[in-house]
View 1 (cartoon, rainbow, N blue to C red):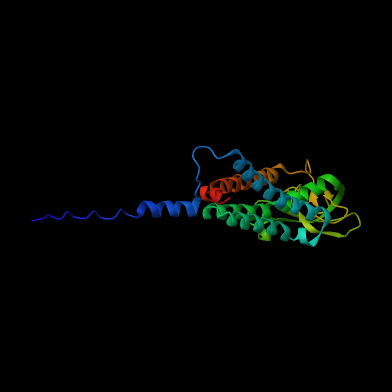
View 2 (view 1 turned 60 degrees about the vertical axis):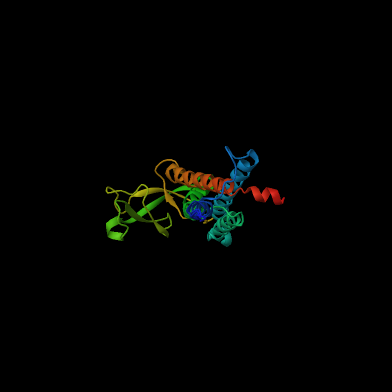
Amino acid sequence: MRIRRPRRPPLPAEPHLAAHVTASVWGPAEFIGLPPRRLAVKGLATGVLGAVLVVGAGIAGAWTGAPLFGSGEAGLLAVAVLTAYLATLRAGRALVGVAAVLGLCLVAQTPQVAAGVVLAERGQVRSAVVVSVEHGDQTGAGDDRYLCSVTDRHGEPLGVRIWRGCGPSTRPGDALAVVYDPEGRVPPRGLTGDVAEWGPVRGLAATAGGLVAVSAVAVVRAFRLRAVGRG
């Protein structure tokens, strides 16, 4: 009597499924060891170009007052193009999403830094007269800042409340040094030291660096061997 051997069960599909999920989320990265130099350069170039376009659009908007740039639409368009390019490469979805979020953060951070650049380059300093002083809790800002409503030397309101140089000892009738853009592209600011604010600049640089790094990793990890075979 012939004894039939039991059939081996099929290999589980979990390893293949896990590899597929990893490739979809983080990119396939089908290379061994360090990525090829050309691929790394391509990734860095992609991230740097995306960050430069976003920041450059914001500075151009503050400098020229062009509606397309000043409204932030050009920066959003740059983020959309970068995201679409990474999606076209079939980069990891998580990395594409992180790049998009960092790009939007960069768009939101750029106007303040761009205004500082404009005021540092062509701003003029004049004395303004304090009309009223309010605490942040009174204005709904919810912080410890004091906000001063001021007028120019002709008695015309500046239209914005100044917090730099405005403090608990400030009283109506006091004079504040205010730097303003003679072309009216950006709102005036109180002057307490350097016109340039390094805190926002450092934050912008950190976000831009994150965008460059994530975009570069996304491009590198999108590498597929079969794409080379087809070429």
